[in-house]
Image (cartoon, rainbow, N blue to C red; front, top):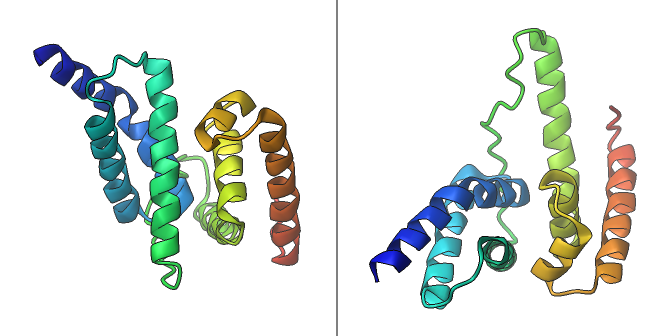
Amino acid sequence: MQDKTFYMGSLYEKYHKRIFDFLYKYTNNQEVASDLMQETFFSYFRSYRDSDLPPEKAIMVLYTIARNNSINYSKKFSTIKENTSNVDIYQSKKTSFEKKEELKDMETRLRHCLALLPDDQRAAIVMKNIEDMTLAQISEVMDLSISTVSRLVVKATTRLIELAEKNGIVP
């Protein structure tokens, strides 16, 4: 039993930041992402504590649980849109204050456009472009064929570009 506890602890230590980042990019809310991350790991530990999954399989299972938790959350609270973007990603000292604010505004507007995508498209594009996952990894997480995931990413990208252009977002 001690080995299982150590394995679960090391799994959490190794992957909790990646799962949190994925959930934060999906929900755009730190508190919700933190809650969903904890729920993801609890679900994983409850369901897989007696399994001996290798780490590369475990992370795919964690992403699947996180994705499902975030979809369930968004369905449950679809009438409540929270936008608390307190995280300052642009820490460069060379970037001027005006540029930082412009980039922050652009990020906020892009996150809004991302939130307008259907859940499956949003998840696919976040995993592909932000989490740098391969189509094979995404297909495993979403339980879809690689070709379906590829079409989903293309469709999501096209729609996101349309929404960005419609909202006057240019790099």
